[in-house]
Structures are given as structure tokens and as C-alpha cells.
Image (cartoon, rainbow, N blue to C red; front, top):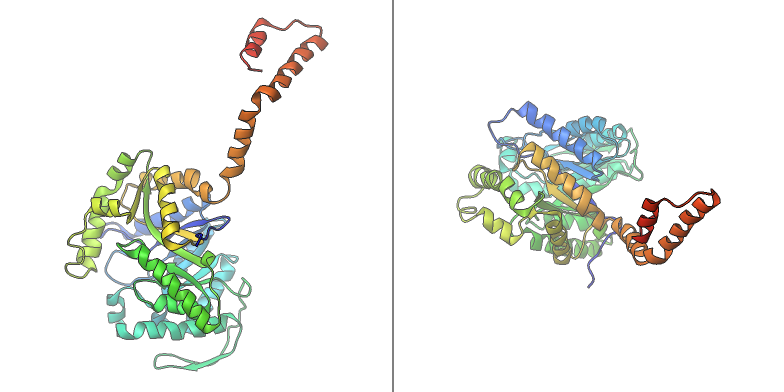
Length: 397
């Protein structure tokens, strides 16, 4: 089967965020907002901001607050919760906040939904992890009903809705885009298909994650067929790790220390299970393709491989990280925007075709331009200057 390719592939970031413990958190949050502004200027399409409440690295507690701040600094980039942990919120309150955000952003808001990623968050709220995926599904059904303008009555073991309806209609019609996080569990793809939503393959950037992402989409399609809904690959977002530089050697040097520190300190020591990342190495991650690192040409090849593995998608997201210095991180995104993105957005074909046509016809077309120059001097009653004649002899006008 030929992989799906959108006419204009979209690009964005998935910002958990990840900030090394020991840094000034106020400055870190400001840097997050500056990065989103930078991407807006570079014509990136989306930024998804996470919700976490523990473990020290991911310090955005309210993606809605961050989105509101980012919206004031940007013009066109769409802003989503990446993701809202549905079991942590009463669905009526979350739906109401998101609709308000929809208006404040003039329709740039998106809702990313998930069960909650950190077990420590759920523990502090007294939520059994076994219940989180069920609660996500219950909440998602209620939120979608509220978004559609329905009056919702629903009682579960953790929330009640009595003739609930939103007083503010969505800015986007029929309502904002909703996407469900997909990890190594089938819960996300199942909900995606059941409700006919988009999907965020957030673990595709982890070892073995890309194959898992493709399996997740297959599950979503099966569930959609079973539920009588529909899903489309254009609404599928795939997450990768990426860093670019002017040379591959420079790109590797830029991130080796920061990347290694991130995997060993965060995934290995903070939230990882004992032994899971014992054999992780930077070189191994690069060689396996877990990290896209190199030049724009390397990145183009990597995107083609990802399209082949997954069968195609609508949006490629980059996991926001600080493995390199701030200046090199900004340069990496600029290289992508200048040299990689247009390759997958239908922009380079007409430009290259025009160049090739001009080159192929220069001997005949530009000969007439030379004749026009000669005639202009003749009409003016002037002799052709020697330097102009020499340029014409060389095929220059």
C-alpha cells in the first residue's frame, strides 16, 4: 500500500517540558514561551504543552495557562494541551475552560486528552492507576457531548453531571480539534477510534516506539470501524526526537552530553523502572533512529523512513528538549523550517521546475535578450560599449 502523504505536512513540538533539576524554573518557563514564539515566526504549525505535577522535570502544571500566555505572543501557531490528564479534572470544568481558551486564542486551541502519564501525580491525588484509562474514557465521552452543545447527565464513581451544558458555544465549529495520546497501551488508540478523533503517538520517540505507533493506528482504524465512526491519517500526529546542525559531526557534538544526561537522569533514575535503561547508549539511540540527528539532508531521509514505517500521517512533532545550548536549539529548528519542511509541504517543486526550465532554455531565450540590448543601443544612436559586447560574447546580458 502506498503511504499516505498530505499535500502539506504539518510540523510542531510536543513540550512536556523537560527542564533539568537545578535550573531557575521562572527562566525555564519563559524560555518555553520564547521557543513557541520562535516557531511561530518560522511558520511551524502546532505546539502541544503538557500537564505534570511531580518528578521535578516537567514543570507545567496547567497547559491552559501556558497556552493563554503563548497566544498573546504569537500570531498563527495552533496551541494544544499535550495532554490534559482527564482523570485529574471534573469534565465539566475542563470543557468549560477549553471553550473559553478557544475564544481567547481565536480558534487556535486544541485539546489533547490522556489518562495521566506520571504515577506519582495519580498517587498524590489518591487515584489508582488501574482506574485511569477507564476514567479517561468516561470523561472524554462527557466532554465531547458538552462540546457538541448537548445537555449531559452522567454519574460515575468519581464525577456527576446533572443537566450539564456549556453556556459558551465553541469558537471553532463544530468544536475544537481533539486528539488522544497513544502510548504502549491500546487505550489511546481504542478511544481514538471509538470517538473518531485524532491521535498523538507520544511514545514514538522511544526505543521501539515507531513500530508501536503503527500498531496503534491499526487499532484505531479497527475500533472506528467497530464503532461506526471514522479516523483519518491526516489527524494523526507522530512524535520524534530531532536535532540538526550544519554538519552531522556538529549535531552529534551539540547534544551528546545533554541527551545522555536526560536519559540517564530522567528516564533512568527519576521515573524509569530499574534496569530498563541500563543498556541505553547515545550511539545506540542514534544508530537505531530513535534520535534524528544530523543535517537537513539526514532529516529528509529520516522523514521518508518514518513515513514508510507508519504508512503516513498528517503532522510530525518534535519532542521539545534542551540537549543543546539555547542558540543551537533555535538554529536546529531554523534549519528544519528552511530546508526540510518545504520538501514535504509542496513548496520546492514549482521553484525547482522553474529553475530547471530556465536553465534548459537559456541559450534560446536569453539570446533574444541580447538582441534586445543591441537594438536599444542602435535605436539610441550609440555604439555598443566594448565591455557590453564582451559580456554578450560570454553569453551574459
